[in-house]
Amino acid sequence: MMGFCFLLPLFVLLLHGVFGDDVVKEIEGETVTLNTDIIKKEHDKLLWYFEDTRIALINGHPNTSCLYDGEDGRFRDRLEVDYETGSLIITNITTQHAGRYEAEIIRSESSGKRQSLNRNRKCDSTKITKKISISHDDNIKTFKVIVTAALSDQVTTEEEPRMEKREFDLAVSGSGLSSAAVAGIVVGVIVVLLLLTVVAAVIKYRSRSSRNTDLTSLIRRTAAAAEATPTRAVTTNRITASTVSQQLM
Image (cartoon, rainbow, N blue to C red; front, side, top):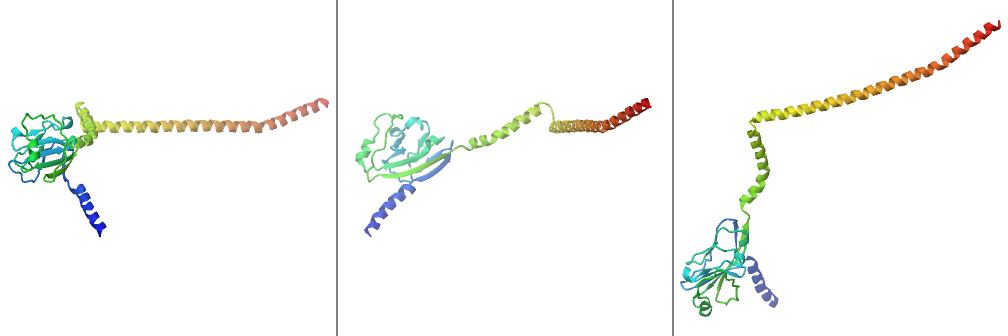
């Protein structure tokens, strides 16, 4: 039972760490408004942080408030605030602005911390101020902002093959030929190539046939000559023997 009582608060803390942030999804180039949904009194102060770096100090009036550029100046000329509600507005958002935002409201009753936030000098927008530990009477609301690439970038990637085809079409139209004429020329070239291929195959076949015929004729003549040679030899011997007999008689 005691173990269960220990694990339950731990589970609640883990659950809050995972699901405590409001998730805001937006596309590059759009304007994002982070609403605090906090009832802000006249003298309450509001601090906005991005990844634990202060980006806005709202005292209820522009003259006593300050908007900061943030690290690398990524928020320069991009931040606006609603001084009545304390909501933060990010214009022309990019992927550099994706991350965790935190709104901390300092109630007028928190005199010690409130006095330390009074701005008596000119706002220095380039100042980098890191978040300090909070007291138990501070109200916090956090946001997780997700920024996706602009749709135009995705369309540009998909349109690249189409642009190549379009350039080809423009080149054809610039030559003064209609699409039908170009198609006819392409078909004609293909037909000519096929005919040349067929003619080359026929010539090669006939050349082989001619060589085979000449070889067969040569073999036949050689065989006939070989068969005739013994017969001629016998005939010659008979003539020689007959001549000798006639001379002996």
